[in-house]
Amino acid sequence: MTAGPVPRLLLVEDSDTQALQFRRSIEPQGFSVARTRTAEEALEQLNENLPDLLVVDYRLPGMNGDELVRIVRQTGRTRTLPILMLTGDAGSETERQGLDSGANAYVPKGGGADLLVSRMRALLRQRRPAPDRAAGEGGLRAAQLLLVEPAATYRTLLRGLLAGEGYEARLAKDEGEALAALDSGDVDCVLLGLDSGGGLDFVGRLDARRTASGEGYEIVLLSEEDGPEAVLAALAAGADDVVPKSSNREMLLVRIRATVRRKLARDDEARAAAHERERELALAHARAQAEAAEALAAANRELADANARLQATQAQLVQAAKMASLGELVAGIAHEINNPLAFILAHHDTVERSVREARTLEGEAQAARLAKAADRLASIRTGLARIQDLVVKLRRFSRLDEETAQLDVPEAIEAVLTLLGPKLGGIAVERRYEAPPTLTCSPALINQVVMNLVSNAADAVDEPDGRIVVATRCDGDAYVIEVGDNGRGVAAEHRERVFEPFFTTKDVGAGTGLGLAIAYGIVRAHGGGIVLGESPEGGALFTISIPIRPA
Image 1 (cartoon, one colour):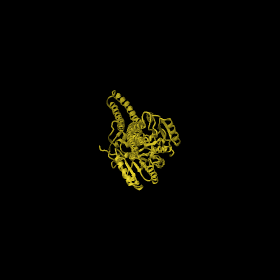
Image 2 (cartoon, helix red, strand yellow; image 1 turned 30 degrees about the horizontal axis):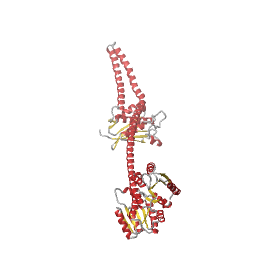
Image 3 (cartoon, rainbow, N blue to C red; image 1 turned 45 degrees about the vertical axis):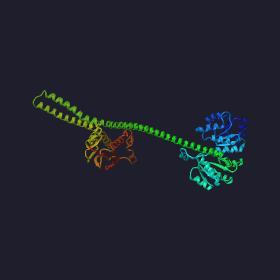
Image 4 (cartoon, rainbow, N blue to C red; image 1 turned 90 degrees about the horizontal axis):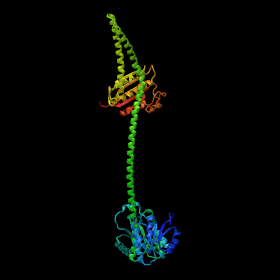
């Protein structure tokens, strides 16, 4: 036998002497033997651990060996278990009963150790059909037999006997026709009736063929000789059973029936295993789909949560940057308001004093005092108008009450320039308004973008020669706002990073690195784009492009 796991045998034998002789004959040949004394004990043992081969004595106390075999064959788990029956009886009736009960082979106890070992090795040499072959067969069908017999008379006789058993037999008179028949379709059993010399060679080639191809047919040699030497030679060559042609017809059919039953049982087992694998694969596929769907749903939920958090964070960043920008403007705006306010307060004192003195005077002196008070009131009105203009422009810049509305772009730019007036100082600002004035957008956000760009331009230029150009134009379906300057520009190695959050080229503490990143996000949210280029003035040029929407 080839190297591999040690075959495990379960021997059911009530005689201690016979069991000891069996062990001494078998274990040196590479078998592991476990033993029970009764059929009932054997059934318990089979429920716990399934051996590779069951060897059963026909005569047992209580339940006989053939009854045990019938029970084993009725159970799906043990239906294809190889079973060898032993008996000391010489009659063929015992052999027939044993084989009809479901045993695969029959060996007399006096047959010798060599015959016993050869039979066991032949039974352990079970071939299972390839999974695709087994899975393709289903339902009830007649067994397919191939009869290779050169003698026409015996060939016709045996074909009639097989047809009476319900088998479909194909005939071949030599090796060439046999191989052609095997190539043309599935065969369950090959009955080989060639002469002993050529027959054994062909048995070896058939055995090699089925090993290489995975075909599961059985090989039964119909031998002219019935001596032990002929049986041993045939089993060693690869035959699964050897049936003497001299056997009576009933025994011949019993032996063939046992062999075919064994093969069909293996087919059923392979088919059931294939169906079970298909079912397990289908269940695994369904579970995988369910798990994938659940994982996808969970991922979608996590993505939605992350997107919601991102949007909330973005809104907070926009607001924080806007507040930071407004904080930067507070000092300048406060100064712009404080100047007219101080002027108003001073003139208010003058007006009160003039009015109070006028009450004590008459004629031209009184008129002079009242005229001075009226002049100061006019100055007060001018200061108040200036303060009112600052407040109106500040309100226009914020536009917190409008999410999407019509924005007067030039008016919004002027509001930004007014609010940035203290920062701009002596920097010259040129306006080039070529596009239509209105744009549908989020006014507060677009104001924020323009203020960030103008503020950055103011930081980039130097007085007194600083120059900023703010322009609007239309480019197809896009509304374009440009902010350029004649400042230092942006170094080439920094241009691809200027829109990254927290990236800044300003000194530490002079910038947060959020202004351009938030401007980029705002413009993208409007479906537009913002790019950095070189200004004709020599510095940086930021170009905002926003789709024009109907009013």
